[in-house]
Figure 1 (cartoon, rainbow, N blue to C red):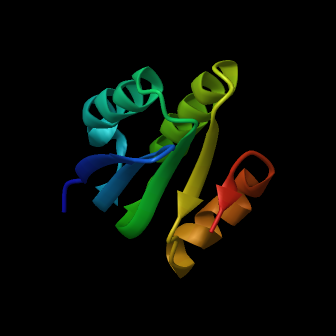
Figure 2 (figure 1 turned 90 degrees about the vertical axis):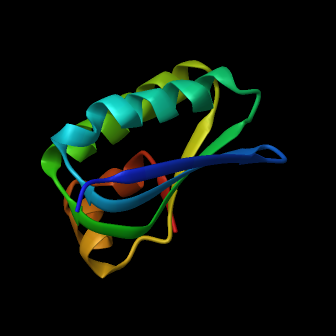
Length: 102
């Protein structure tokens, strides 16, 4: 299943909701969502991963790039609603040191 991306801005949080397989082919759409988030006035960027079925290593690179760009503009990134499979991949990659994972 290809990755579906939706965005929503509420209060101080810009939410990017992902559904499907987070793989390299999603890089253009994810970059657009990332840029929308970074161009917003929101302080926090939340990546809702509740419906992510598969997380490829290329997705980790996309998340790291988001982290670096957000950090450069004094914004925080949180990864939320991570189910067991996604959380295991993030844990193995030591993403807990860079992101708030919920």
